[in-house]
Length: 147
Image (cartoon, rainbow, N blue to C red; front, side):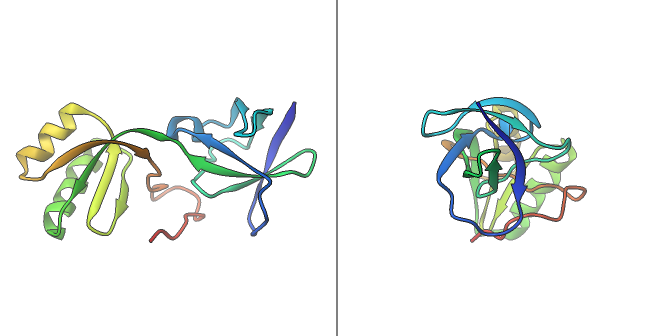
């Protein structure tokens, strides 16, 4: 079984991918199956949250690219930046992980939060797409720039 213990901080050509949910990407110890079918053991230092696009090196030298899995999320789109800021404020007060992009926010699907945001006048759509939330203010300064 491959051992995945090193997170790369420089570009490299990935030989395969590893698709994980957000919950799985927050774990430092996890038995996984690479997208090519091989089994591996994820063994990272505590506190690391893997992001979509991160690269890992296996003990055999193979480079693996981490991919965010499709999962149930709620997506809010609006051209009204103040309305989106209010939504972020209220979701942040509930310590809800958020993926924030220009004109939209996304969080793990929760019908209670959906209703709260609809009450603020926003349109909420349930989707099944990759979820890659912000690392947080106290996260490592290793975030990715997203378009």
